[in-house]
Image (cartoon, rainbow, N blue to C red; front, side, top):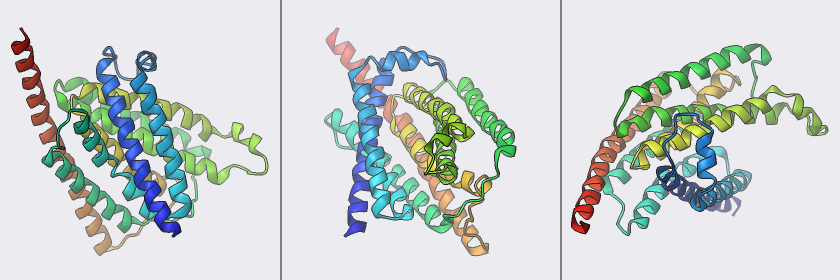
Amino acid sequence: MGTLVGVLCALAGAAAYGAAGVLQHHSARQAPQRGALRPRLLLDLIQMGAFRAGVIFAACGFALQVVALHFAPLALVQPLLVTGTLFYIGFAYAMRHQLPDARLMLGALVAIAGLTGFLLLASPSEETHPRGSSAVVPLGMVLVGLVAACLVAAALVHSDLRVMPLAIATAVCYGVTAGLVRELASTVDLSNLGTVWSKWQLYGVAVIGVAGFLLNQNAFQSGLIGALASAVITIGDPIVAVAFGATWLGEDIASGPVVTALQGVMMALVAGGVLLLARRSQQVAQEFREEIASAAVATW
């Protein structure tokens, strides 16, 4: 019974995350264009009722995720949460009073299947062996380097695909934030919560988490079709978190010739699903633009 409650809460959380993404994408597209990581964008968005509702949905999704993890294992909850992309596509098309695009759904399903298989095969251990504060600088350099590379790529791309590097940068920030939260939870003294203020991880979460949220809105603002951004962020986040856990927290990841080969196959599925989403998103965006242009001509 407990596992069933966990599954239902995980699916409800995924739906809440999907609804939050649709509302945030709608708001970001209405807001004035801002450069990447410009806090002014948040000031623009917070004035919009749809964006505030999206934040509430996201908070509800997080609460449901916590409840789901209480009743069911991470290996079951995480794959269910990534179905938020499917809910996103469904809700986005419902707002247009249309049936979801079959190829967008197929791309999302392929990517989700690949991610689910990868997570099950990786099966990271629960035990952690953090590297400690001595490795903070290397971690910061890698993080800044990855995000900077994504921002440079976004600056060079002048099409709907600009959303890809921005979404990847968001996933990197979210995945690292999740890893830092886990490290913080495992090192803080529960009998003396005041010690949390002396933990550098807390400030890392605050800075990197806010940067990720800003990049998330930048990604939504850059693409007419938000499904691609939603998929890349939702799927990339746990992949980065697993990599962070293995390299930083010292979590053991299942390995061996056969397991590693199968993990490679699963990652290929993820890449194939995302590529299908990217291709179809461009086509749908062009179709939407043609609809808007036709409607404008008819009105004129």
